[in-house]
Image 1 (tube, helix red, strand yellow):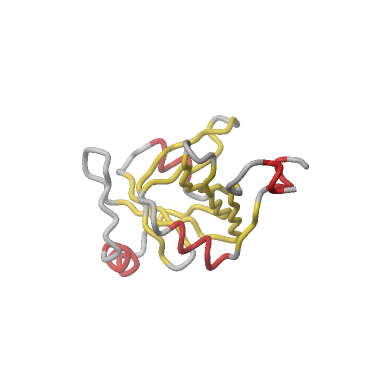
Image 2 (cartoon, rainbow, N blue to C red; image 1 turned 45 degrees about the vertical axis):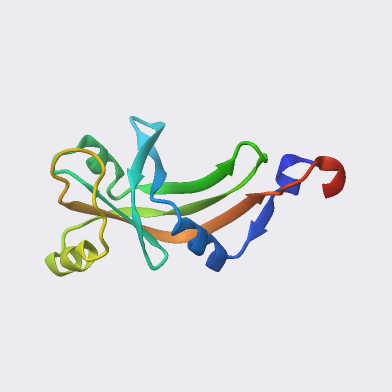
Length: 141
């Protein structure tokens, strides 16, 4: 049995519920035509990811308008199990004042220092949830 065959996939509803339990995720995007990963704290807006950045940030400029992946997870190193949820979609800089006000009510408070008044929304097209099954390989087969 391959690793991929042993991974358990779960529903979008369960993926969203699990994603809401963690405050930080990793956004994967292209920078200088190479893959890049950046850690951000976030909130869900339905099935979309919301996080904040600062004016003039190279990261924000590099992400906005790009196809991205956003991953959250919870791993139990002792038990050798856990789960991961990956959101696939396009990142968008939110410029509409009414939408900025609405998103501000979600409570996305940046952990990074400095003023971060710009919202990025990952408009989700696909959500993939996977769980590493608990137990040893003999029981799983």
